[in-house]
Image (tube, rainbow, N blue to C red; front, side):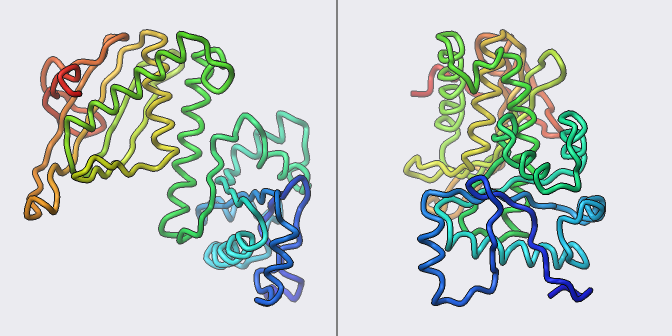
Length: 303
């Protein structure tokens, strides 16, 4: 129960076209039955990621929680229960400004549950959805939701530059540019060797810069750890730049080395530039988003 005596409202969500009756404190013996009910269904939820967003959304009665901290605790319970009941659990950042603009554009009442459901599953914003796999909500998943929204806006910009061919049916030009961009990224990592890095990418484009950033962990055996959504964004920005012939700058920086080398790590920062069609070492020292870097190695020498 909420503090005002009414039954507690769970954060808004949709599941296979309807709003499920989620019971965060369901008895353990009921989990198997609930799981069978959710077979083949997807559970989708919007999450208010900051206290400011929570306060702004109060007028829409998304939750009866007294504050953002309690709201997050209830949301964590809801996600945990949903994973037991549904095959797929996905979430996206519920951004009040985006939602208000969406309702205005489509003539919807933001206080109506149907408006929130349409906003959450709006096809053009599907790139903002992340699959929830039991991560810690506050420490891990919330920052990813925020980045996913930012990444999603960049992906939409890139798709517009490619006339919808990034997420639609790719022609030979876009397909080739996407593969070339993925290969550029691969060669940057191979040349760097094992270590912990961040790649920052910027492409000058009509309508504003396309930017992407991703943290990468590369082991001694060449295995790479990177969030799927960050990899998708990097490849999309590389693709848009190469397909449209747009100038760009990339900086790979971090700590080069591994535990196998007695824990020796060396700070590194390399830079590459593109005039539109080919990525090559920068002509001289550069600075991107506050990170200073020296010209990188020649990518064509990396197998």
